[in-house]
Image: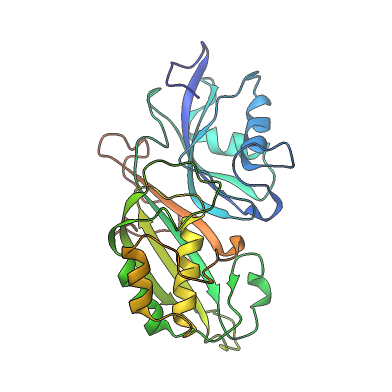
Length: 283
């Protein structure tokens, strides 16, 4: 999508999109299978828009989820503002939903105007995987020490060279990035058995991320958490811009794009928190 004005009769719409990525080949259109972009564009065509123009705040890989993806599309101006989300949802599969949608400035760019992106990773350590989280939680097969993982997360805080912490497919030229938040908390299943003692919630925030970077970061703290990589060694590799041995990206299914924050004056949603989140959530 260019930043040119929408064609006559259409208006640019910004939407907060939630999806479960299990059944999709990722956000961006792929010839190999269904994608989030493809399903949204099919829904937009139902309104007579022959050439949907789509832009998102960032890509998510196959199997990755979102609760706060932000997209921009052009839709007929005749749709009442308070009905945009429900009108589009009528044509979307049940695992993709517009949580909020508003008419916005034609110059709004979900990717370029973003100032902070926050991801969440749900992780299961040395215990049986909760059955209802099998498509929402990554797996480490050994017991994890939350204190060690928090120490490892602290090593990542601030500005570092992350060129080694990404996939070989990444083409980004800017690889020095600043991690502004890296929190690890216990994730508690509210089921009556109260048996989960090795489930964790990891939250990472940065202005932008490299391809699979969050999953590599989780892979790094897992190696520390299981006692196979000293924090000092991880910090040395980070300073040297190298990847520690045997650090691999964590499972895609545990990752979710939680929210995107925008510069003052460029937030089409008026600064309101993303549904299901309290406060800014970005730290």
